Every structure is written in structure tokens, then in C-alpha cells.
Length: 106
Image (cartoon, rainbow, N blue to C red; front, side, top):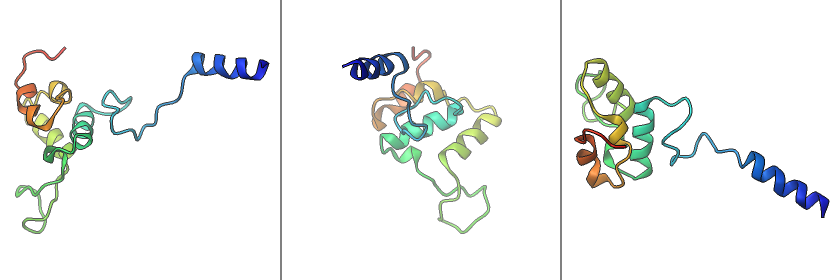
């Protein structure tokens, strides 16, 4: 009985550790905003999270050569506001653009 009580107390106090590989973890620790957004898109199975062909990057024509994260980071470096914090909260693929257009997503 004491062991069971100790075990239950430990679980309540410390909880279960969350896996860093959990695709649903969009708040994720050390992840960049682009990584959180792209992980969320892939968890929803949206095309926006897939690798794609970018003609500005070297490689065979038509072969995916850019990740969602790479594209996002390069666009942000160029000053393009992708509103990644709101886009990462879209509940469905169809709502990504609507969430990206939001002024506030709190």
C-alpha cells in the first residue's frame, strides 16, 4: 500500500515526461516558431508541411528540395511576415490562411 501511495504521489508531483518527438507538441521547448508551425502542419497532414520544389534552390527540377522549415526561415529572413504563431494554431488545413491573416490569435 505504501509503495502504491508513493508511486501515485510521484506521478502527481512529477507528471509524465513529454516526448520531444511528439508531433502534437506545438509549444515545443527549443523549437523555432517555424519548426512549431511546420510540425503542426504535418500533424494535421497538410500539404503546407510537406517538402516541395523551390526553383531558387539548386537541384533536379520537380524534385522536392526545400523543407517547410527552410522556406519559412528564408521568408522571415527576407522580412515576409508569415504570422507563424497564428498559423500554428489553425485547427484544420483549410483554416491555415484564415489563421495566418488574423491580427491576434490569443
